[in-house]
Structure formats: structure tokens, C-alpha cells
Image 1: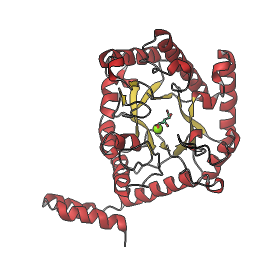
Image 2: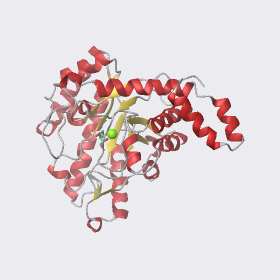
Image 3: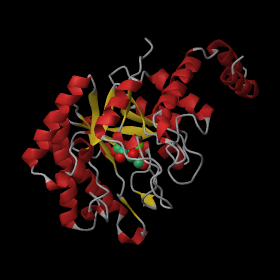
Image 4: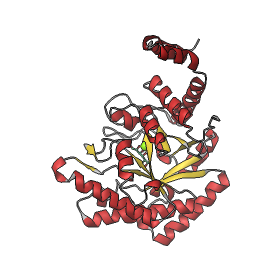
Length: 345
Ligand code: GLO
Ligand code: MG
């Protein structure tokens, strides 16, 4: 199998300012123009967008104005030689989404979520991407008795059906996450996402996005999630990052906490040919709160560096030796072989 060449992508939110629940920003906000320039300087190929990253203050603008601004953005991206990887409806900020988007107990608010998602699809079409990412941020509960899991599953399918009907070409990537901001989310893993896809009117157009940190938060190995999704031909986007155990979502640089887990993700991507159909490697990483403005781009550059070094490690993995150890059920030495390969000479 030909080795995939990777193309890289980040979102404007990955240039974050360091705010956390206990303290304010530690870096000044940068403009969209600055971020676009930074992306180019880094040699990244694409940008991912929330609907309101593409069109700021989207709620205060008419549908026609939104599309006009999306067209202007498309021109700018073309001029810079960049592409939009995806567009995602931001369904977790507005007052209408306090109780969730598609699974809110309020019918009007559910309609708001669907309307906003349809508009996102229109923006994506203008930006030249067929990919819509659905991070189901508030589709879950703080109080389990406040919603029915069965009804919520039906509502999610109804929402996906409405989106699938809105555009016959759009593809939808569900980005599972087990918790945060919710106590429990309704779509915590890739298995849930793909099962949900099968209940929709067009399962072929519903796939998944794996984020390393989210899989780790679900107590899973992200490499297994990648293998599972790719066995179904359903991994259409990827948020690589890292996470140190079961705590708040950390979005650390790729490989920062566990190099071996990162290595196995790269191996899984390589063995399944990720990228061969044009899929991008996106880093959903944030600078540490302590990061100075002068080091604003390090987390992105470093994540890509680590990724590419691990691609080298995956491609030079001593397969023959490993296979012999596997045949002999000598997993003890297989373990050491991996450690020594990662440590290098
Ligand atoms: C948060 C998610 C978030 C999404 C983004 C795209 O935990 O990872 O960053 O990836 O909003 O939908
Ligand atoms: Mg993400």
C-alpha cells in the first residue's frame, strides 16, 4: 500500500488565550487575519470552522448576509491557497442551547438547533467543503432523570435526517465525547456514533471524527477507536491531541502525555491508509495556560513535529522481529521491542 502523505489542519479556536474557570486570559486575543497568516507560516493546509468562526456574529445577520460573508471568506481562503476542512454548528453558546441542541426538552429550541445546522450546511457548501462536524456538546444531561435516553436517541436521528435531507451531498462527522460539559453525553464513543448513523435515512453519509482526548476520557485506547471506525470506512476527520487520564478535557499537544498511545494512533492511521481519500490530520490542541504570546504557535508546530516523527517510527517499526515474537507468544519481549524502538539508539 502506498504510504499516505499527510495534510494538516487546525481551527481558529486552537489559538486560545488561556482562560480557565479559575482565571482570565493570559494572552491577548489575535485577529482572524493573524491566525490565517500564522497557519500559512506554519505550512498547514486547511482550517476548520465553527459556523460563527466563518461568519462572526452570525445570529445578528440575515441568511443572505451570512452567505455573502461566507463567499468573501471563500475568496480569501482561495487567495491564500488554503481550504476549509469542515464547518461545525456551534450549538453550545446560545440561550436556546442551554438544555441541549437536538435533544433539548423544549421543542422551539430543538428547532433552533436544526435551523442553525441547516445554515451551517449552506455555509459549508459556499466554502467548498461537504463535511459537517457535529460535536454534540450539550446532548446529554446533568440530571439523568431530566431526559429519556431512548427519546434522545430518536431526536438525534430526527435531527440527522433533517440535515441529510437539506443537502444530498453533505457528509456528517459525529465527534463523540463522553462528558464535559455534560455529566453524561448520549454519544460517548465511536461505536455509538456509527450505530446512530445506521438509524438515519442515509447511513452512507454519516461518519465519525475521533479526538484522542475524548477516547481517553471514555477510558478507551484512541488507536482502537481509529481501527474500529476505519474498518467501517467511517473515519472522515481526526482531532489528534493528548490527555492525562480521567480529568477535564486537556487538549494537550499530540504525544505530550503518552508517547506510546500516540505511536499506536499513528500506526492505526498508517495501516488503514488515513489521508488517502483526502482526509486531513487536524490538531485540536491548545497552548498551556502558561504559554507566552511569543510562543503562541508552538503547540501546533510541536504536535505536527511529533506526529511526523511517529510516522517515521511507524514506517521503520521492526515488523519481522515483532511478528516472530508474536508467533512465539513472547509478548514480554514484544513490549520491550516497542519501548526500545521508541527510545531509539
Ligand atoms: C471539545 C471539542 C471541540 C470540537 C469543535 C469542533 O471538546 O473537541 O473543540 O472539536 O468544537 O466541532
Ligand atoms: Mg475536537
